[in-house]
Figure (cartoon, rainbow, N blue to C red):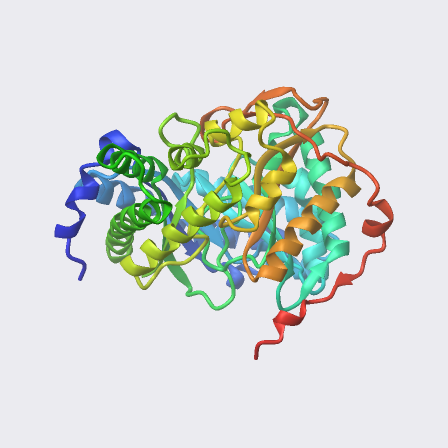
Length: 459
């Protein structure tokens, strides 16, 4: 049983430092819903979600009220939807109907988003997986709550180049299908290498192989808390060393993780299901004071993108992981520091000022907890350019045995320098572009697989 006495200091920070539980995500296995009849499959999916997740929202709200901690989102992660489509190979209508069934079900139970409209194709592609990927533009354009993820690479398997090229085409088609909303549909699609099986954050949440039938995973976000802790250190000591700043961030991450684990255990116990992991990810929002970029500025990077920015990202990411790991034996998901450009006003401003380029962001992804996230590209971006960006990011993850991802939004009709505002948690930003957007066409079109690196041979 967790003690609550060591949480009081952190709980006092909630009102003024933007500490929240970003998401309580229930994972639900839907594999038993498979049927050769699309209508029966969709009915089974709706019924399963009602039964498994119907009490999530009121339960989470009751726990939040008890402890005075805001739970921003209640979400659902499912087993990869492509599994349900193996009996419907080539039937895009069945794939779209499945997405709509998921959308209807989560709206009925009050859940904000559902992740797991997904396929894992890092070593090959089944007919069901191909059907799901082909349906992504129509399925995500027709639904408001469904998020999709595709895993195209892993350290053990290498990188599926053909899958990366196909997903790039579908991402551009999805942006065009949601043209009226500036291509917003692409914000619900993420392409992974080494995708985690227990990630509670969107758009990449799913219930991976080896996970329980039902599980509660919690995502805690506290960039404002970490920034204020560093600012207080700067007030106490005029010129602290970087290792002292890292230590302050680590201790703060410890306290934040304890809050998340407490909330997760309480929700799971009330629902009578298993608690899984707490994901301590410094996931920012567009609000001032809730920014990862502001942490780097407090550390001494006054212009984000300047030399030293990547080192600052590494130091913060490591401190967060150390603090979280010491606080709980159930830390998982993507714990660390996110750099979603549109969702972080300081990062977004740096892109607008052109101190932070796409290439510098790519370098930062080698040491952050995810990858290129919520970045706007011109509407005339080619499939080969987008596929090349995905392959580069996957290469970083595969070689370094870490999770990397690409969530990029090609904005129809937009050009570099244009400003786009999605509002809410999705934020706003300036369209950017690669310094060299062409010249990779022959490489991407060769297809096949990039073999696994030699460091995959560890068993």
